[in-house]
Image 1 (cartoon, rainbow, N blue to C red):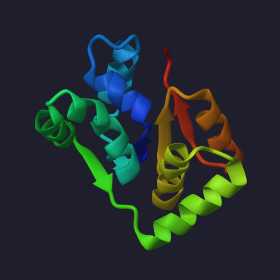
Image 2: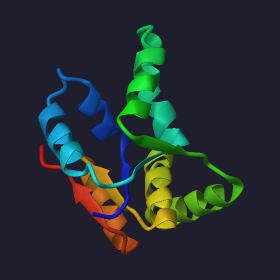
Image 3: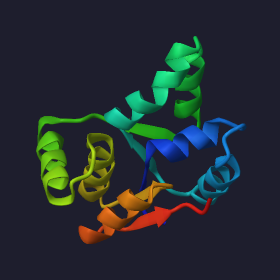
Image 4: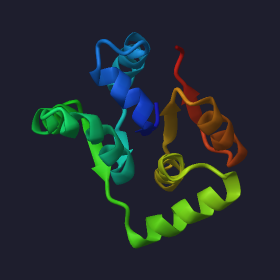
Length: 132
């Protein structure tokens, strides 16, 4: 399997056992053990919001790192790519960041979001719509 860029909804479900989609996210993650897994800095910030509100930010950051996720900085060039993706697809900023990162790294998008999945296909990128 190629490198993977996880959408926030999959990571949130993965780390929250009470989440309705936890088992699906866990199953996909375990099947991806031999792949590099990436998060954009925007996705990383998005998934850290709830843990920050609940006083478990440090614990959550350690778990993301120990689970093998690599956070990729949003560089000046990546900002240009995000703008292009957003312009072509109409995606919201967090989803445009996921797709732009995947395109720049020749990686696959992993999401529960049907709209992101569909828009990924319009730019001829590979996406996995995780079974719910």
